[in-house]
Structures are given as C-alpha cells and as structure tokens.
Image (cartoon, rainbow, N blue to C red; front, top):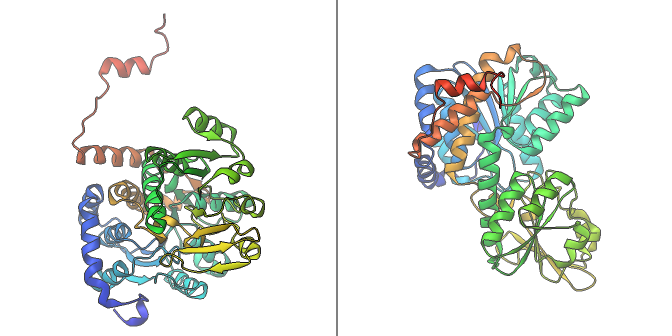
Length: 423
C-alpha cells in the first residue's frame, strides 16, 4: 500500500494493534461466523465502501468482515479522540485496509481524512455521526447517484438523518442500525453504561460510592450509565425533557429533577442526550467546587465549552494526564472538564466491550449486504433494520452463549392467529 493510501500515526505500533484486534476477535463469535459466511458467499463483491467509524479493535474486526465479503473499503475516524493508533497501523500493515485516522488530529486533519473517504466514491457508506453522508451531500453531490445506501450507527447520526429526510434533502436510503434492538438495547445500555463509567474513573480516579452523579438524558445510554453508577454506590439524579422517560427514571428509583436544581447538588455530571448545550452557563455557575463534567454523546456540543472558557478566570490544562482540564470560575469554584467534552468512554477508555459490539457490528455487516441487494428499490428515507437480521443476530448470540429458548407449538401458533377463541 502506498503512503498516500493511508494516514496513520506510527506504523511501528502495528504489532500492539494486531494483538488488540485478535483479543477483541476472541469475544466476537457472531461476527466471526458472518465473516466466514461472507468469505464464502462474497455478498459485497465489487463494492466500494467508505466507513466513518471509531477506529477501535472492534471496528477493525468489522472492516475485516466487510473486506472478506469482497468490499474495497476505506476507513476514517468519526471522532478526533476515539482512534486507537496501534489498531489503525495494524489494519494497514496486516489487513491491507486503507485507513485515515490519527488520535488527537486537529479539525483540518479530521476533514482531510473524511474527504479521503468521500473521494473513494463509495457505493455504500457506514457512518457514526452522519459526517460522511453530510459531506457527500454538501461537497460531492455528483457522487450520490452511485451511492446505493448507507448505515448509521449512532443516535446523533440518526437524528441528523431524520432531519435531512424531513427537509427533503436526503438523497439516499439509510438503515438506522442504531435503532436495532440488537444495538440500542445492548450496545447503548450495557456497552455505553459500562464504558462511560470506565472512562470517568480512568480519567479522574473518582470514587463513585457516596457521590451524587447527574445523568443528563434517560435514553438507552442514560439508563445504562445511571444503573451502573447506582450499582457502584452513587446517588443518581436524572434530568430529562421527555415526560415518559422521566416517569420511567422515577419508577426505576432515581431522583428526577430539572438541571437547574441538579447543578447545585451534583458531584459528577455526564451528558448522554445527542442534543446541544444541555450543560450551559446557568448550570456551571451553580456547580460545587471540584465538580466533574463529562460527555458520552457523539459530538462535543452537549456541554457549552465556549461559554465555560468565557466564565473561567483561569484554565489549568491537563491537570491529570491529557484528559482533565480545570476551569476556575470567578467564585473560585473549579470545574473539571473531561476529554475536552468528547466521548469520555473512547477518549479516556477503550470504548464498548467487544462482546456487546459483536451484536452491533454483526447487524451492521448484515445490513450492508441487505443494502447492496435491496437498496436500489428503497426510497430516500431512514429505515429500521430488517426484522430477520435482528432475529438472526440475536439467535446467533444466544447460541454462542450456550443458551436455548422455547419455540411455539403448533397449537400456540394457531391460537395466536385466531380471533374466535375467547372466554
């Protein structure tokens, strides 16, 4: 591979990256089975694919699967702080994958990498935040007629895509892999829940027991995070805008209140909403001295960092490693911002455990094959993942866990399809 065909930090890291990829693969048996199937059946043969995803060991095993299925794939990072540089190097050296990803790259470099993925002229795209699809629509509309469709992995990305569909500007069909039950019920709840706690603890060494942890947002990610914090002994407060989710949080045993009130009592704050500026000026001004503020949403806009910069009379960068910045306000209260407001679970930890990404990426791989087969017949809309893919992935996962379940009897099937039998 020519140097111009990739941009990674350091190829000498490849040995460590290969070990990390293989370790993750051990815990991704469903994806292994699909990779073997793809290698035999070649459902992606001749397809150019561009993927804008977090470049981690788990993602490496996904792109290996896509390549095994016949795809010519280019991978770029979906976040400046989520790349595992050793994994990126190994993908280039050991698997001949074109990778454009460097941890900590600046904004210009990020979009240079994104442009390389777009200029691959993909037939199919995979996105984690909708940046690649957005770039294609805004800068490369001439490529869109060749794009069969896309897959979107995140809540934030699906929100953007549904806005594009509603505005009538979406020019390709998209499968919202994020909305798959095999993704959001497991990856978002168990994966984000555990990895977000992991990132906060690695960044700060905070003891959660006895602390008041404020969970902003009670979607599947918020549910997972709140539950795990409670399990570690924290007092958990939930803030919400959705009355149904707020009721659910209350009935799950959490305190629910507006952020204006929670800001006064919280020790640790974490945003998991997919929205903008959910922690802002009036909240910072009420926080305790030493408050810890983190984000586990896709983009770094959930915390109003520009206003925090303006409020601070002093900023002490990198007070603990390179992931904690201390902002001292006029009242001498210190606010500790983690990972520059970027995804704490990837910026300070290793992201989701491989076993849960096994389902998400198995669904992603099968969805890509489905899109190639059916995409030309779909409208330019955002679609839920096909039910048969969900069913297959969940059954495969159960089998790898050694779990069997019941099946309906003929009598039960007949009962469920008949309306005449009653009291």
